[in-house]
Length: 322
Image 1 (tube, one colour):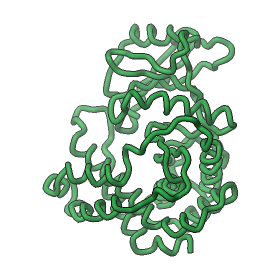
Image 2: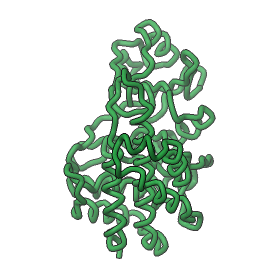
Image 3: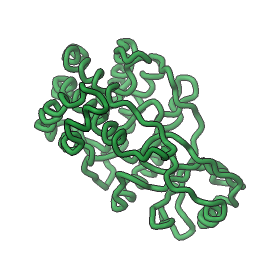
């Protein structure tokens, strides 16, 4: 989340008036993330929809043809009891509108706080909810290819170029051949569903150990469930010093398997899939580091964090699910 496009109060009020959610009371820009412009919106409400929402203006990495997939998936999962926000449809029934040539969507606000230092109990809950999502999404009628798959990661790093990557850190250019190796993995035979693929702690809302919301589905896609688990493992199971936290890793996997046990081929490929997952974030963070305007209201994220996590899975990942 971030703010790239600035909308005036009148523009925001006109947009909110297209929804049956009451009148606009306030709108505050959210200065997090790197892809879209976001506001926390408060309205007078209509008695049934609540009064707080997240307004998103899609800026980058979003093909508008994919928006029905993203937004309908939220509604599908919410109807099946998953803790995800509903999409607010406008007075004409549309799930998104165009504002200044960009698509905008209004999403239900959910209570909770994203954990900054996750506990094992929280990791276990997240694993269980992720498995619940995977099972609930298997009958979702739409499909979407993974635009950030391992081949895309390799292409992004290649486009950045070794020389430019080295300006961020000299350890980044050696990741180029590793990304090519990950792109050669064949994951087609692994069990598939709709997947979040970006379930970092800041995309999970919690009250205590209970998950109250999974948010930011804009990298969701059809793909291997174990890849989604590996992304979540890489995102959750390292401490503030970037060291692997075994208690978190074990709890996350145990929570997942309490709802959906992994199949043998998923267990066998977990380490190389996790390495590929790390390289995805190395690539996207390196690209953002090089391309984000200096005056954007956004904090760059260091790709080296996931280089270190790639090294962990490379040396110790095979033993995680043995």
